[in-house]
Amino acid sequence: MNNNYYSKNYIPSITKCGKATLLLGIILCFGPIVVVSGIFGIMPPIAAIIAGTVSQISVSGTYMTFISGNTSNISE
Image (cartoon, rainbow, N blue to C red; front, side, top):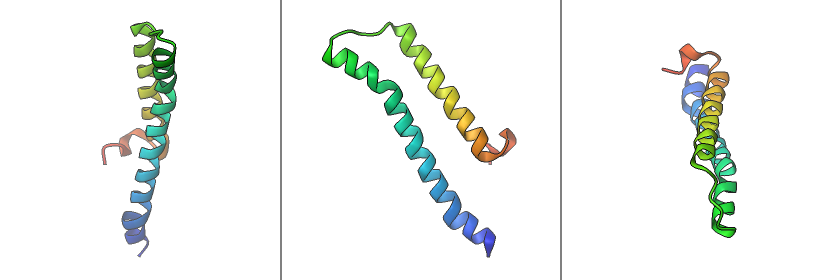
């Protein structure tokens, strides 16, 4: 019974919440670039954009690791 609840209710809700929060994080991280370049016409250096991208990707990976409990569970 608990396994059924886990696979049918818990995992889909956690996945949905995780996707939403990661999307929100990406928007919040790259929003300032869009605002600065769109409103003020100033484009940040490409190195700064790449550094921000790498930072966001590493945060996403860390988030997934903490949620899963350890890195060996990510492949499941």
